[in-house]
Image (cartoon, rainbow over all chains, first blue to last red; front, side, top):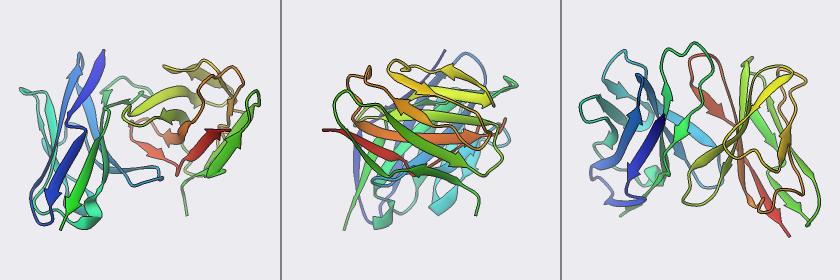
Length: 116
Length: 111
């Protein structure tokens, strides 16, 4: 069984400050891990994904995430927040090497607010 | 442009009505998915389809139905049996590497 926990349903940062959004996962098999971003009344856009090629994954808009197996974590970071980063962020997990089309398990989401 | 389209963007339903949400993709993806999104609950899987003329129930299929007659299309019907249908509905598609790509969503409101 797989699950995802996103710590903090709301995170608020100042413009220019570090963004850290936390994601912990549970998986009985090696996982694929994803971060998606959602702007109001829009669909989800893929930020980045971990597929075992490298533990530090760089994504779009300056975001990156590090896979830490020992901590079962995949936290999302950005060195300097912009006002345009205000959105909801979702972490998701699916099993690796299943040979098929895998269901994604989503966390509950973290809403990021950026203030001047 | 390749992508996923959903229509309509906003949909209003009266009590007891069935409504159908459209999802079309031109990415040549084999698999398609329907999710429901409620505030504070993330996304929950309703139905998914890995191949034409085949689909499987997800975690919250009760009160919903789907069809997959064409690779490009995966419409979702919200039936009158769904007692709390007001939500944001998202369609997605993928190939075998698991990355799912999402449409813009349909917001359904029951009047």
